[in-house]
Length: 222
Image (cartoon, rainbow, N blue to C red; front, top):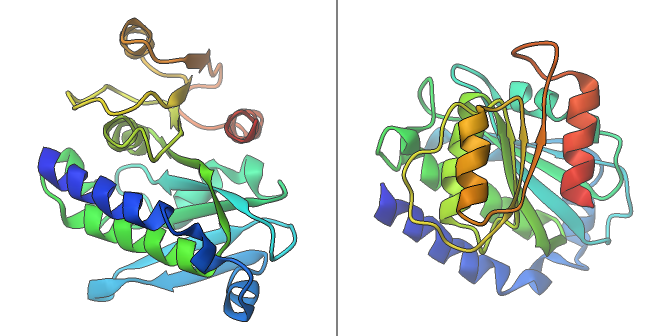
């Protein structure tokens, strides 16, 4: 699993180094219009990209959102509905091939889809590479922590809503982290390793209230 995540990081380093290719073109203006877009990836895979209001030419923040076990991209986008009307944001939701993310099971199948989805989003939209983050709910939050910590120079922020654990990973960079309704030992471990962690409890149980969704997106965009 480790080397495959390194491959993702290398691909994104190359991508982030050339952000100008996604700005100012007629194709970007059309393809990055506010609304919901379906992206066709290799191998018959798809991803859903939700572009919030804003000028077509402005550089946008991008949040890669990972769905829960047995979830869908639509579920992942719904978990972060607090950002749907926020100006200048791209919510990018790929789909796991199986019931959960393969890189959490030691395989790289879904990493390729994540890489392809990010590559397409950068090609279609003007993205602010200093505001790229990764997020998820439940098993998606655990996966976001795993991938985000390993690629911390690329994902500047991680939003983990109800994560269950942190898998042992090679730490790269120091992204800031937002945890809502997570295990307290997850927060303690991250802080002990020097991460800046914002914690918020959720009183309503295992679910994402709209207020928490809004707060998480606002934290990411601050």
